[in-house]
Length: 147
Picture 1 (tube, one colour):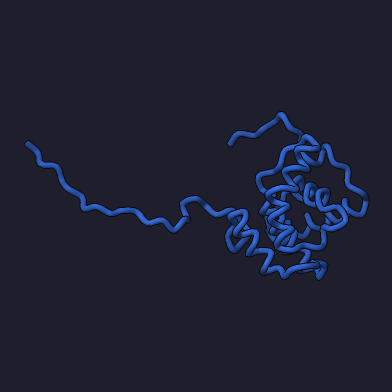
Picture 2 (spheres, rainbow, N blue to C red):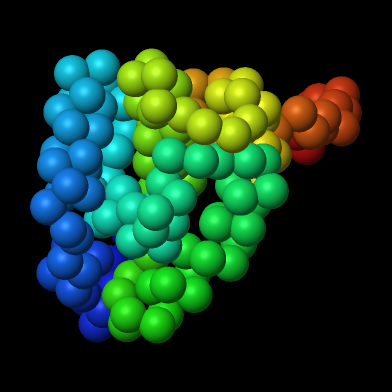
C-alpha cells in the first residue's frame, strides 16, 4: 500500500467547533466499543462537508457526498480523502440511528445506497474483489503424453 504523504490529514487542517469536536469524540468512543470501522479524518470530513446538516441524510445526500462533496471539500482544503470514507459514513449513520438522532431517510435505505454507491457489503465493509459472482470456464485437465 502506498501512502500519499504530500497531503496532510484532515485533522491537521480542519478545526471543528467545540460541539462538533465533542460529537466526533462520542462517535469515536461508540465505534471503538462496538467494533465498527471509523477513520477520524473521514469523520472530520463528513462533519465539515455537511456542516449543520450532519444529522439529516437522504439517499441522494449519500451519493452526492461520496461522489462530489467529500472530494471537492478535500480538494479545496488541500487534504487527502481517506480511503475508508464510505465505511466511516456507514458507521456514522449507524451511530446516529442507534442514538435516535438520524433524520431523513431510513437507515436501511441509506445503507442500501452506500452498498450500491461505494461497494460495501452488509457489514459496511468494502467488498473483496474475489467475492464477485463471476463464473469461470472449467476445462477438463489433459495429461501430457511422455515420449
